[in-house]
Length: 435
Image (cartoon, rainbow, N blue to C red; front, side, top):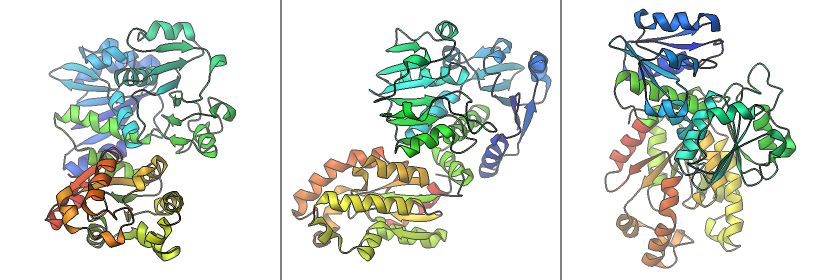
């Protein structure tokens, strides 16, 4: 399989590495090249694409709109968005798709940023912004405000006013309080890393900041956000996710999301990352954690053990109030998340604070150890569980309170009923990206 990336300046692209990892994992004989093309040569490149021997290409800045006139077929999503970033060459025809839309959505899900009923501010009005706005509108955003210096041009290119509360505004009207910011401009990208599309003081009250830039890892905008304690997300997960979606199109097959996470965790700064286990008290996190740590030769970090070793029995800490314990637990999350290549076993209530799960998501892959409620009730040791003093009834109540949060804050799930070895094997496959 012969693939390539089309763009104007590609020297810092990570796409060849990402696609090589896909080829290696799936045992595909393929190569992925870079095609730097000047604007005046684009039409000639597209004219010869069918005869080039390439099976497909990705398209990046600044050609995601320009290539559309050369295509024989454009998917409905790409046509609606008005941008193409993936082209398949098949039967002497060019088929255009937009996988940025999918990649953006996967990035939000990976970082637990909800779209439905939230208010968004999008900076920029180029091809990337089109995919972002379309995804937000399709997935129930309460409102979308697009800020651009060329308001007239944006009004011609964005036609979503009837589908959602969508407005195009100029920068002098920018307000971020209670909103999620998405930067789709290249401001802050390498090598101009000292620039930010907006000043720090405008971020006050912002709920989260997402920057589609992935080089550098932390743009000046994201640094501003972190300094204010605001969730900050870069575009690297989007890059990987859209690449895997493109591979699905070229190969005509489904590829597990676990491979996306595996590649992301392997290539991001800091290395492979951690495998984080969440679930109910009594679900088997500690036992499975020890077994998988030994099998994968990884370090084990049991959060409850760490807390008890450093401050005392958890049951005693709860006597000072649950909030006292949760504060200490949150500090322990930060310590655990600073590790690398570790198995992290969490306490059952770690999911009660979103910031805990954000730290964990940034450090690796979160897996929900899902044990049937009747098995938990049968096996659990109530004496060591401060929130389970009401026997069976308290277990059921706690399960009902938390089950949706375990599902929401996990990237994958493993069933642990009676066969713990099967659970460990599946967990290993998830970690390796093959399940």
